[in-house]
Image (tube, rainbow, N blue to C red; front, top):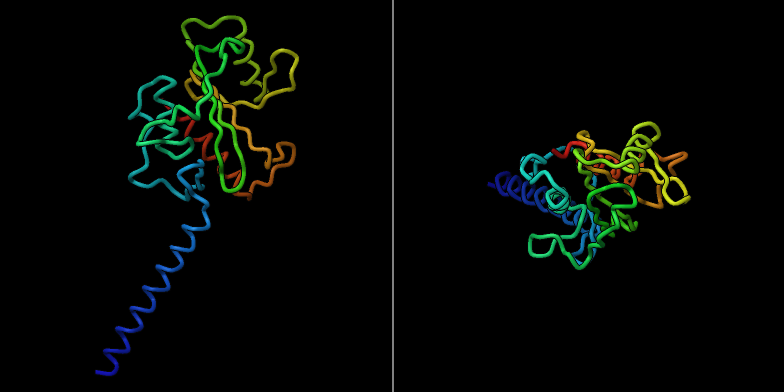
Length: 190
């Protein structure tokens, strides 16, 4: 009987310690409703949203990013009060949106643009070609901007995290891994 009670107490202690570790991890992720915060996923979960389940347009891409936790949702929808509509014509795009987010303690900016592939002007072609060749583009004599194209080339992402040194990135840092995760999800969108 003593062994049985000891065994039960051991099981309870192991469960309590495991639960405590999970609680501590949840607190260390700095997630709040007021700020956007995401953590690098080790592997896809069955509940992770799939790009194909969203409309193939900029709003669908934004909703997809919201479901992934990259941009802020309010009552299950994009919090429009935190969205800045961009002048996409400067880069020859159809439309664009900018989101200010947080990852851990870092501020990040996510800009998403949609191109009309059936109606690309010279500016759009120049920028798309530049991104394909160098991963960067410039407009209005401003410094080069690092950007990413979706696999379909219909969408462009500008992801800015000042904590990442693009010349010599620490590929083991959480910020770098998070950016790579965002880029992977973005590239695969429809």
